[in-house]
Image 1 (cartoon, rainbow, N blue to C red):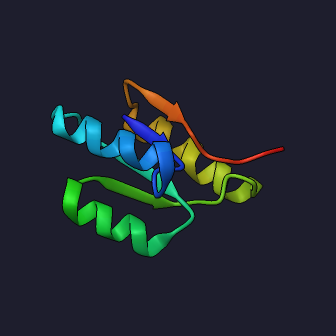
Image 2: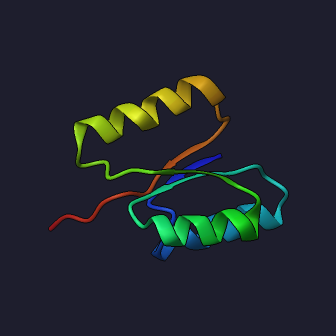
Length: 80
């Protein structure tokens, strides 16, 4: 499963929930330190990305094509 916005809030909680179910994780977020911590704890693939940036969206899209996750949870972002 790929989770965007995985370093806080609902995304973070979903990452830990799915890891407990034995689901392999790809975690995306802006906070590199938090991603590295979660990588160690959850044995996850991580990608630091700010999805408001075109180049970072391209990085995540390429990773999706490469790894073909069965589940994508787009949890990134906050808007009014």
